[in-house]
Length: 235
Image 1: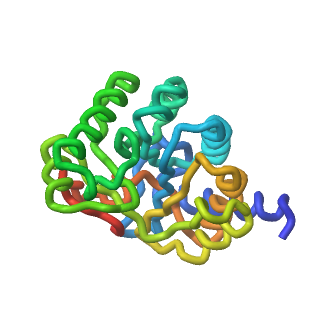
Image 2: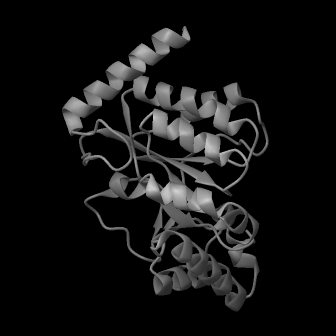
């Protein structure tokens, strides 16, 4: 399929989604009823990084919302302007711990500190305290759930992933996501790896060609409320 034909099909799919759901613009534009629409949420872990600015450009151009789960020490401190930009452009900013340990394998006090420090850093940059988190490697337990409940954080897992930390080939990343994406699903990607951002335009086009509507994680589950401490992987 040519790039021109793919773009045309994507535009038609986006228009159809707009007519059916009222969603035609970027991340901050009107509601989508995911009980009716075939919704999917794009999420990106581990950033910000050197490729994140390019990713935000792509998402803005394609009117695609995303949820970013950010690491406090290093990434957030190194790229504060990108964190501010994510929030300003309507994307959701979430907590992915301070240094990315497995929270189930560190002492409870340290697990709590990992979340608190990142909460504070993100709140300072965006003016809002995150309400979503992703436990590193998806590892959680009752202690992590208790800290998340205390801090007002819902735990967001995933059910579609590209293994982009192992294979940096954009075509393989694209194919894995398009093959595994399901209505009501959460896609896991990493904007810190070389091949991921180049794959995003084809992923967005491919999802829309298949009738999916891209939404934020919170919109995916609406009108159900995401409860702090709860674990969510599929609407």
